[in-house]
Each structure stands twice: as structure tokens, then as C-alpha cells.
Length: 553
Image (cartoon, rainbow, N blue to C red; front, top):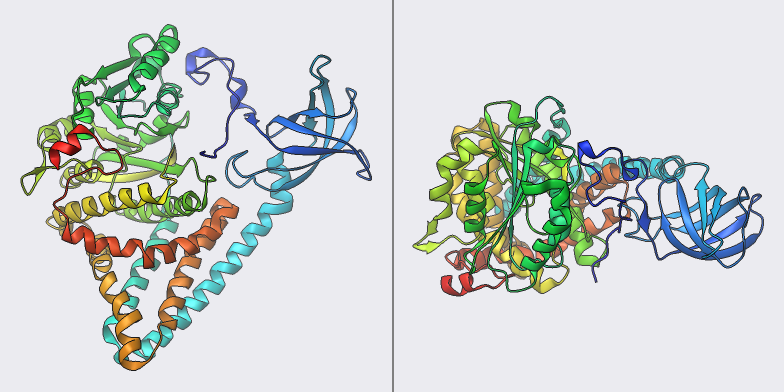
């Protein structure tokens, strides 16, 4: 079962549409909870009663206590915010002075108002210590990295390939962090609101598609300038029925702004995206994956970079929605955030983001239409290109326009929570990375020199990675009896640099999972590069087998 915060629904299905008036969610979002709370006397000396938490928000709690309470009674609530109850960073034990503001005589449920919000309490008692610890951790990590690399330079001629690789990898990663620190998101101009068409390709997403569509429609954006087109790619589950149900639910509010197009048989995600583009009327095409959920201001923030005519496309930030499900999703949460906030932000400094991510990306329609036909029917060694649509489309835009990253435009996506699905997804991503990076090598040298050097270095290092690891962990120990202690230490310190940066920005308990992910990548995922090189012509999707995949196979 996937674990993520569950918001209590607003009175209206689409509460954030500008013309629909105010919404209670914008002030104090409430979340369902299955936790417990103890009610202590106002002096916090003895426990008066306990109960089950029904829902909770920044400013209060609804509790089902095992004793009666009276309106106006002063108490202190002791409770633990379990992982996945509130957004990331709030999981902790709290003691909050509160007041009883309402008692339901029929159910016995009691509403409490906190004297200080949860955020205020955490800022005072928890988050500032996280930030201080993160800063100390970053400084200690940099000292460790300096020591490791000093030793690497001293022993450079002992094993030139390994130590040269380590120095290049250090240069690449440190520059990513440096340029990411210089990155700033594009500000919002409320007067810049081009017409937008959100296109959602859907295949067998019965579980998530209603939430995806709701997020696309529920936007702080002029209604007359926003439409949503869902293209079902021949789903074999109940996706179409779910789409029809949500359309009936919102029709009185949005009318024809939500359109559904159904392929009689499966044709592939790229064809679904192209079909949606041809049906669209907007000046900006926004592609959203069918298991990704936009925030109410995502579209408004996403389009802002397009004020600059040189910018042809922009990608937003993708967060892991089901991050609390298990260790695998927790590791992915750290990886996603570092990948976007560090690596894409660094590329955006040079206006050359090399992958506009599928969960959320916007393209100028006039530019996209010029590439649509060749992109839709792209082949590789005579086989249809059935995956890597985001990287492929990015390459077309990179050849003629700038591509950037907008950190403040956020979507949350469901990631694989089983190792089998995750491994298959990563295999597909590595094949598309290999294919499209080879394409990009033909023109990236024309970009800003530092960006070009970084791009080619970022291509060569992963390809050489398996060779270097094999040499460091097998060849050198066998020939010289020298164990790769310094190499492992280097990986540890670089993982700590990512983890402490994550802790400083997110103030979350998840920071520690960046360490096992780096070693998981080193010993398992890195070797997918070898198989990707040997099987780069394969076109199967893998995680979502379909008739189109069978034909490609």
C-alpha cells in the first residue's frame, strides 16, 4: 500500500479555480490521520485522556477522546506526526498548548485549536537544529572530500585511471553544486498568462487518473486560457470509465475545457502526446504524466520563463508523492530532489536543461509543431522509438532554443515501490539516456563552453564507471593487495554532500537515505550501463507491457 499525505477534500471538487471564490484549503489544509494523541492538563503535569486523531492541520486537530471535554478547556496535546501524515519535514513528536473550541454531542469528537501552529513550533524547536547540523555536516564533508582528493593526488601515479577518474568526477559534482547555488527561479508576472493546453497521455492508470485530472483543472489560472486534454492510449483497465466519471463530475464547472480522446487500441505514449497536441488550442503545450499531481499554482509558475522569446521549453520540479512507502521510495525521494534542485538547476544557469521531465514540462506550440511529425515517428536503427520521449523532444528544442528549469512549479508523482519495477524503469531510462545523449553530442559543443565541457564529462563518466569500479574493487586488490578504502570513502563523502544539502533545504528525516542510494547505485544500478550499451536497440517499455510493445518486440 502506497503511503502519502491524504488531504481532507474541500467542499468543492475544484476549489482553487479563480472565479469560484475563496477556499478553506488555501488557509489551513487538513489531513486525515490514523495517529493517537494524549490530552494533558494545562500545566502539563498529568494525562487527562487519550484518543484517536481524525484529522489534523497546521492550526488544529479533530480528536475522538475517551473522556468528555468542555468548550474553552485549556490542555496540552502530546502526539507524534507519523511519516506520511503531513508533507515531508513534519514527522516528529509535538507538545502543543491547545484550546477546546468545539464538541460534537453526537459523536463525542472534539476540535482543538493550537496556540501556535505546527510550523511555528517546528521552526523554534526542531528545524533550526536541522539547519545547524546540516551546515556542520557540509563543512565536515568538504574537509573529508579535500583529504580524500589530497591523498588521490599524492598517489596519482600509483593508479592513474582510478585517480584521474575520481578527480574528474569530483570536478563534475562540485561544479554542479556551485552553479545550483547560483540558481534562482523565474519570478511570477500575474499579467503573463498565455493560453495553455495540458495534455495527459494515459495508459492503465485507473487508480490515479481522477486525481491527475483534478490537479490539472484545479489551477490558479484564467479559466478561458486553460484546457485539459486526456488521451487514453487503449487502456485495458477501467481508466476510460474513470475519465468519464470525472468529466461528468466537473462538467458544470469546466464545460468543454476537459476533453477526452480514446484510442481504440494501444499505439504508444508518444502517439498519444502527439494526438493531444493536434487537438490542443493553446499557445503553450504542457505535458503531464497520468500519475502526477499538479499544485494549484504549478501552471502559472511554469509558463513564466516563456516571457523570454529565446526560451522554447521549461520543466518543473518533480517530487515523490509516495516517498514514505518503503526504503526504495525514500531513496528515490532524495535522488529526485537532488536531480532537480542540483543538476537541473545547474544546467538551467546555462539555459540548457538536457531533459525536460515527463511529469511536468511546457513547450511553445509554434516550435513544437515544427518537430511533431519527425518526433512522433522517430526510429532508432529502424525500430520505432517507444520510450525516451522527454529526452528526445528536449533534444529537438535544444538545437534551436534555450531550455530551463522552474523550481517553484511543482508536481508530485508516484514512483515504483518494488525493486522489479524500479529496475525495469531504470533500464529503460538508461537506454534512452544513451541514445539521446549520443544525439545531443552532435550539437552541444555549440553551447556555452563550460556547459559543453560539463555535458560531455557527464556522458563519459557514467560510461567509464563500470570499468573504474571493476579496476578499483577487483584488479587492484588482486594485483597489488590494496583494498579500495579511499574509493569507498570518496563515495561516502560525496553521498554525504548530497544528503546534508538535502537536510539543509528540506529539513527532513529522509536525508539519511541518500547514503544507501549512492552505494545501491554503485553496486547495482551502475552495471545497468553495461547492459544498456549491449542492448541499446531494444524498444520495449518494460513496466507497462502493451500490444504496442509486443509489436515492437
